[in-house]
Image (tube, rainbow, N blue to C red; front, top):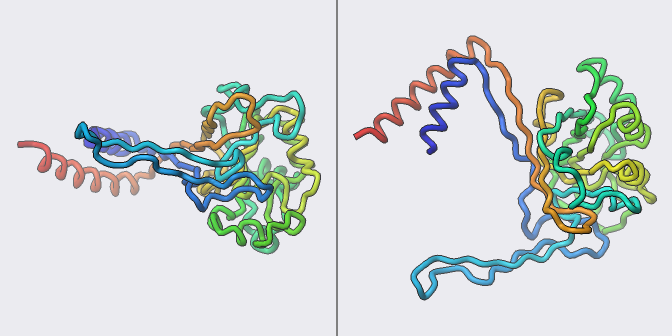
Length: 282
């Protein structure tokens, strides 16, 4: 029950000085969901029935129409390389509770949209935070999540001209380093593609997919992640033979609360406790 959860949460902070965060990194799917302009169907929910039925019970039933690479989604390796895993073949151990690192490129992305996570960015990150762990997912933070779902702002134009798109992604050199030197399992971007806007032969897609990595695109709130210390779970629909799927992405982490912070939380906990007592006790 909610009151039990609140009591447990408060006790954890007060007694242990630890706070736990759960971050939903998925854009809600609706008729504004962004899709790559290549003719695939846009997301549409059709409500078939909604209301009280003759038997007196409530019922709602729906259909959806959607392309695969729409909104927050995962590209399977078979999307850009023959005979690699499709979405149903990716081992679930590579999807759940993976260590995640966040590479912040907001400063340079604010100067120009045509930038990437580079090898130099990764080297600077490791100098400050330590080596990127094997089995990790590397997440790009460019600030593009705040532009979603404004198509013109996200793609850099509203003409559906892929040769004139402008948004950040990953460089080939960075992707190669992460594969060969760090053994990661996936990458994620808050933009529409892991290749930068004007890429025409999608070299980062090809490189990552060849090595059976998965790619997460249009991920929400990547810049709210800590640089290190979080885990990421990505749950795509298990569609046989598909090159991708809509995906629920979320991260979790804990952090220690200072002594002053614990005093603050103790006060809030007492207020919540008194509220629960007066609300639920006879």
